[in-house]
Image 1: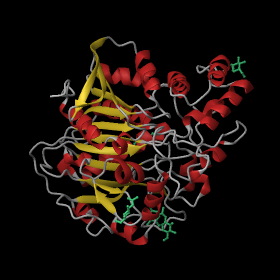
Image 2: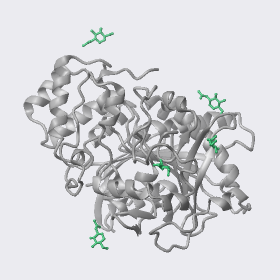
Image 3: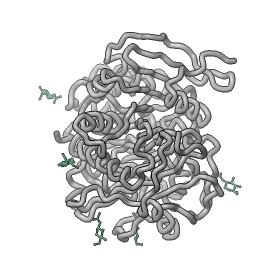
Image 4: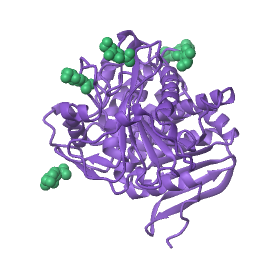
Length: 475
Ligand SMILES: *[C@@H]1O[C@H](CO)[C@@H](O)[C@H](O)[C@H]1NC(C)=O
Ligand SMILES: *[C@@H]1O[C@H](CO)[C@@H](O)[C@H](O)[C@H]1NC(C)=O
Ligand SMILES: *[C@@H]1O[C@H](CO)[C@@H](O)[C@H](O)[C@H]1NC(C)=O
Ligand SMILES: *[C@@H]1O[C@H](CO)[C@@H](O)[C@H](O)[C@H]1NC(C)=O
Ligand SMILES: *[C@@H]1O[C@H](CO)[C@@H](O)[C@H](O)[C@H]1NC(C)=O
């Protein structure tokens, strides 16, 4: 299906990602030679740590010329027992290394021009974490055939990510038996369920060799159902005093979120809507914007109003991306350094374009379904563990959207809405549904939840992995 919606703007400035997780048994398999040569030993600016980490390319299929880039961090301890987490960002087109690894939940966060800090709440405290840049055209991932960049979409992303995983396990056979989960955020609300479904389906017919020990997934501030996501997007802006009553009423009157095409009046309403967000950070409505950037496109109006006449390509280039353009600038500079690329075994073919946190070379996204709720429902029925979380100060995929979208599924409530706690304070609210779905909010966190609430995120992640209830009281 081609993405031909006029309402396109809603779908094209999502940034974040998703994660895949695996837990260990005690089998110790010796790592392959390829694994050893992917070991990262001299990353510039890296704090000293006890765990190992690896980075490199996996050729997706022998018959093609696509290579996906990964960065993998072993857990800080008990590597053999811990789950493995693969984090992929959304966008589509944004890098899980530039965002997830370097700004959100990885052990080394770039918080400054020159160096990393060691993230005390890194998710590799409790899991082995794999960051994947997918599809080709994102970050260091590439194809030698430029035509491959024309065919990308949700389907190819899932298919190539699945092929990547099978080959990654061949390089890291010691993690093959670990329990495997997927987690992510933003547009990864598409990627995660879609990849999960592929794994689930292909597992049915798989040999022992291609079986993935998949257990469930977690997604945050995730795009899952356009009509309700969009309704919640508009309502959030009104309920958080960002748009006027008049604009709100006009949009409600003129826009039919169930339709792919929109009227001129709806479009001008949306224009005004986006303008209202242009001086604040839509991904984190109560935090300051970066004013250090010399690139004025990043400081002044962050959200560019995209008239409907823009081509997909133009639109792509005007997308704002990421929470903090200051850290994003540092990240972009860092991953463009030759010495960094060498240490990471990246860009070995001397790509003709620079590293960017969100792709500038993917010009087209060919398929993106309106909803992934049927996939989520199917995987719940299959008994997979599924958690959906939401940082409640994100304006882009706000908590209102997530609540409307989850409600669309019409699931029966098992445990009603209640607070959950971290360090004796309310960290957010949680409700569980019959059939295995858990919905969690994270209080005061923006789109990239681990950036704003690192401790709460680690707690959430840990409880997800162990399938334990989030703390119900202060003590
Ligand atoms: C792309 O081409 C380069 C140069 O010929 C080659 O070294 C590399 O292995 C190719 N990559 C893939 C994924 O086929
Ligand atoms: C960057 O590092 C310097 C020196 O360590 C420090 O003074 C400064 O506050 C840091 N800036 C940020 C944005 O963290
Ligand atoms: C998906 O991947 C498989 C094997 O890696 C390949 O045979 C198939 O053609 C791919 N399908 C699509 C739609 O790309
Ligand atoms: C949108 O498309 C539908 C079906 O093609 C059509 O009936 C409707 O008039 C269109 N609406 C607008 C506002 O263009
Ligand atoms: C890859 O390396 C080439 C040559 O050094 C450089 O010009 C290019 O910006 C790099 N691209 C990426 C994506 O790292």
